[in-house]
Image 1 (cartoon, rainbow, N blue to C red):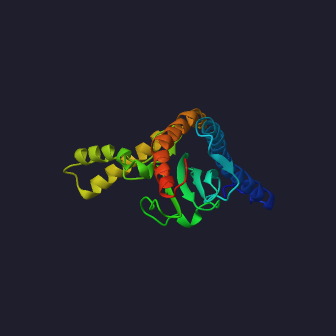
Image 2 (image 1 turned 120 degrees about the vertical axis):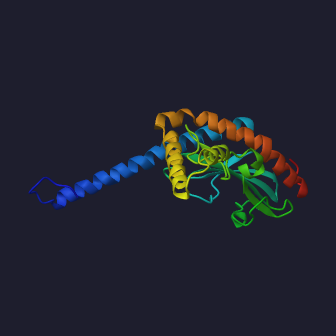
Length: 230
């Protein structure tokens, strides 16, 4: 801890510094909280308008901060939808997850059970929405909806271009070039909070459109396998 020359930090000054440090950390979390609230508010409003069958439920979610919606097709079959803000405070993005169950309980038993789509005849299932359109991914990483900026990770096209540019370089030079490219991408993705907030509506709209285009047909196929009317 820094102090003026010849001065010894007192318990009060130490405590003050700790409080300041905590307030700074909480400010970062609060900023992330503002984005979460904006996303949840916008997503719930648009879902109510375009897919009113999904109703927000207090059912326990898989991750802290997520919001769960359900759609009861019949007494023994439910669709589930989860809006998952990234739990990492430095990752300003969200994910959409879908699933089903033959009981009204959130299908926690399905989380992480399948690497790909669950069998449609399974009594419960769960998957992330982007897994239904892998051919559209820009990189090998599962895409989240980033707010106000591009993903901080390199796309397939960017990696391919980097390989061409770095052809003939030593392994160490290629490593440094990759590190520099990643750092530049991280800087590009780091934008002010107001910019991120202004992007919420666009990203939520895109998520809902993809839910209707890819998620609903898949869930309807699952419902048919369970003789559940949609």
